[in-house]
Image 1 (cartoon, one colour):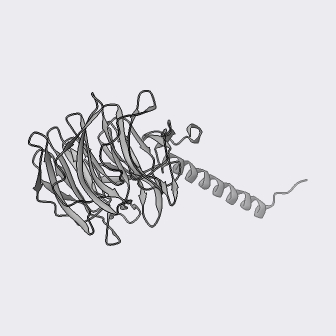
Image 2 (cartoon, rainbow, N blue to C red):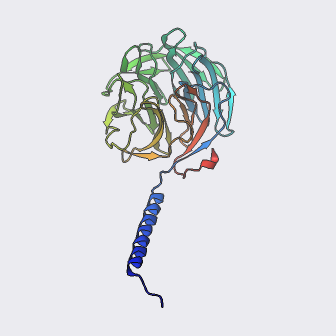
Image 3 (tube, rainbow, N blue to C red):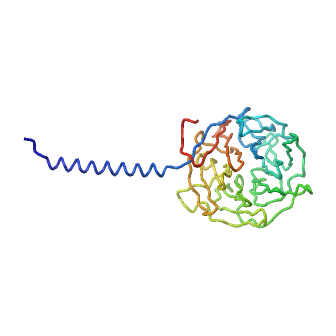
Length: 335
């Protein structure tokens, strides 16, 4: 007759309890998985590059200029979100450059400033692009000093450019009036100097942060109201030590009323992505960018769709293009 071994039975009960606990923890972890899925789209037609400048009008992304490790560029391209295709347009009329800035006013694009490494020169010239005629017009030079690594954003009436590097880091801001073709300095930004920061726009508010100055990554975070032109300081983006939102050379975009910061540089190229909810002022980590970590990329966003493309990882220059779906689960099969 078989007898029951109490010690063996206790071991089995203990092992069963451990496995149940492990299963429950795994299930909880799965339910808390980070959301966000990146889907590979049509890669850029020409030379891989970084430090280009980009803007979006409707369902069309526009980009130009940049640097591939050897050459600077002044070509100009559109990306059609609906057809997933690229088309070369009229060249940017200024000299070749990288790290230019751009913005949109009333469905016209503006691009200027930047750096030409062939002449070791910071630039201040500016141009307007009309998508209906595929033509450029030179406008008044930027009102501040010649520089690169600035941020820019637009409203229905004006364009704004500020911060950057002209031999030293800057924090001034300037407003462009297309009717008078003139620049006017605006005041009130109480943040730190920086270059290679980022902005995203939600409604009538522009959010500004990240960047680097004198080797220090900036952690202050600001909101600019396009109606009142008033700056408001928000909670620093390093408040939670587990969330390293701060960085430089990142891309930023808006989707469905939330802001996103992706990739960039923090002691090397990074791929992390964070979502900002303005109503709660909370940052949430999303799925990392699924291809190479990168800095100096560009983004296209019409508020409903967003794409991240180009950039570099060390000396590797990139030409891939990815669309982001922030509320989907990651799927490796669509890359």
